[in-house]
Structures are given as C-alpha cells and as structure tokens.
Image (tube, rainbow, N blue to C red; front, side):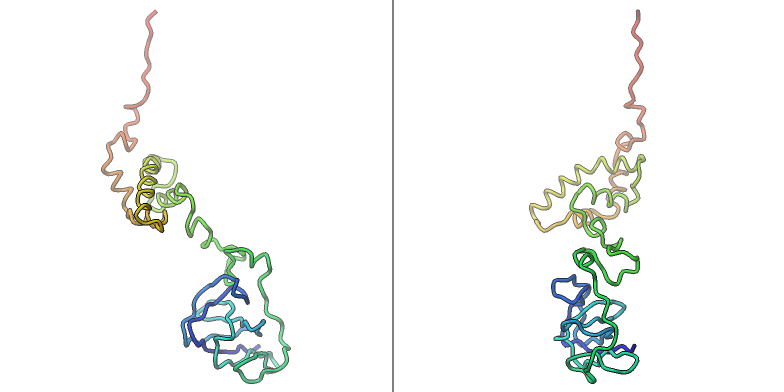
Length: 214
C-alpha cells in the first residue's frame, strides 16, 4: 500500500471517527502536511500526523495525493490525482461500543478502549475527597501511616476553603484549588503542627488504667 498526502487549509480537528459527533483528539494547525492512511469514508479521511492517528474532513484538505493499493490504483476523491475505483481494503473503523466510550482513543497502545491516563480520576474527580486523596499521595503522604493520618485530618479544612474560593470563582475546580495550595502545603502544615497534632505523642492521649479500691 502507498500512503497518500494532503495539506490542511485551516486549523482542523483530528477526530476519533469519521463524524463530527466523535471525540476531538487534537487540533491540527493550518498548512500542516498529513499522511492519508486509507480511503475516505463519506468525505472523512483516515490520517496520521505527528504520531497521532484519526480522521479529518476532506472539505478542509488541499493538494490531496490519494491513498493507493499495490497496483497503483487511486482510491482518493476530491483534490487529488487518480481518483478511481476502490480496490484496497476498507479502513478499520471504531465499533459502536468504542464510539460510545468517551475515553476511547484509536491511537492507544494499551490494547484497551479506555486508556489508563485518561480515566476520570486522572483527569478530574468529581469528588473532593477522591481528589484530595490523590493530592496527598502526590505529595508523599499516601498510605495508612502517621503522615497520611495527619494529611487526612486537614481534609475538612481544605474542603471548606475550596467552597469559599468557589464563591469568588464558580468555575474553580477542586484540582485547580489544590494545585494553588502548592506542592509543599502538607509538608509546611505538618512542620507547623504540634507533636500531638502530628500524632507523635499518642501516649499523651491514651487512656489510663484506674484502680478502684475495694
């Protein structure tokens, strides 16, 4: 098979499938050369550009050199040379199940319709508690230990601060708020805490045995 080529006329969305209802993977800058990797499907071309694979609308391509099979027969349409009958294999399109998955990436190398790096918890958790758990883990306070217990004791205070900050900026997300606290927030808070607050003198608060005389 011989790949074709084309150039984008304007900024053009690279999509996961041959439709405007599919996910936008990347916006290709204008006047960028793309490689055509298959025949068009209802005016949508399968392409690769800068290591990304997907589909683009042929309405925004120019200078199209069509994709051809081993015999050199042209398979492209519109703007290219050759035209002709489709003799190559049809492009491999996403299944309906894949298309319905908002995290589907046709360029994934992990053998799954959902990439580990694009799951909700990695992108943005809707729960402040889940996002805070990720935040303290990123700062080295994860796990069920003295440091982790101290960090979790500040969760309610951080949640209240986030609620107050949203009054001034309703678009503020929990991840943005926690990032604004700084990567050393928990370490500084722990350094400013007393030994009892840090849990280093647990025996001070431990219950004492009492003898009752008979």
